[in-house]
Amino acid sequence: MATNIAVAGKGGVGKTTIAGLFVRYLVDKGLTPVLAVDADSNANLNEVLDLEVETTLGDAREEMKSISAQNPNMTKDMLIEMRVNQSLVEAKGFDLIAMGRPEGAGCYCAANNLLTASMDALSKNYKYLVIDNEAGMEHISRVTTARIDLLLAISDPSRRSLTAAKRVIDLAKEMKVLSGQSYLVLTMVRGEPAPELLKAVEDMGLNLAGWVPDDDELAGWDLSGKPISQLPAGNPVVVSANDIFDRVMQGI
Image 1 (cartoon, rainbow, N blue to C red):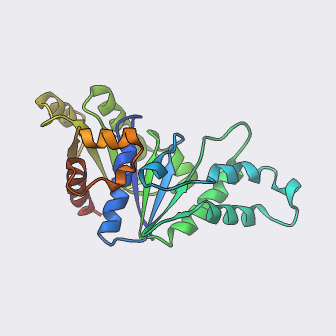
Image 2: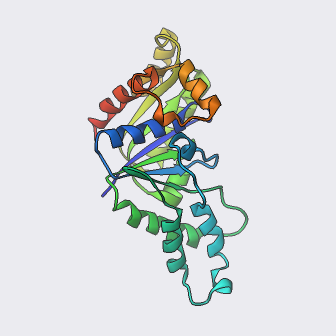
Image 3: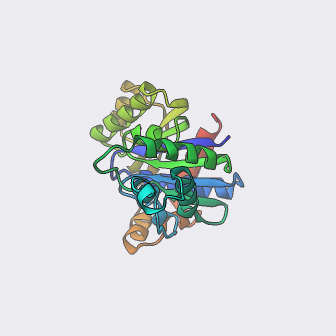
């Protein structure tokens, strides 16, 4: 059974960067195969990992609503299994699958149930799933998996972002999808975290795994469209992120 690692946080805090670097970390450590799951409606994990996505599970979900009219010889189960396999983007040591945009009008209960079953079956082929998620946990429980073994809540050094990270962790516990540990990861930190920031983390009861610095090289790569997961090994963001991954993986 795969170990499910979820990365979540408020928009713009660098969660997709952390998710992509975590995939790279697992591959470099030989902890393969890995399935990277882009569950964010603003999907761009593929850009971080330098991959092209041609189809998503959202496309399959839409198609399922009218499958009987299109091809009476193909059941919805057959279609979703085929589309899940078609949505996989293969790479060295890992694969990527994108969930796609949020659902539109109409009932998607049956489609989501089939997707959940298909994703559960697919996950058995991997050692680790790294899920780049939206701030809420509903998307994970509804479409991908009902179990999170490790949750990284990402926050920049602001009170509002910290509050959002705490809500993510509280929601995962409330929905009973978190079976393992949860950690806070601070991003875009200049120098050392301010004492006021560390006090706020402590007051909120958050388990701080570490922080990654604000970095000009990362910003430059992002602006130029270079895949951030391929930053040099000596880059301070990569070094700090790997230290954090070493720490949190000890609890799995």
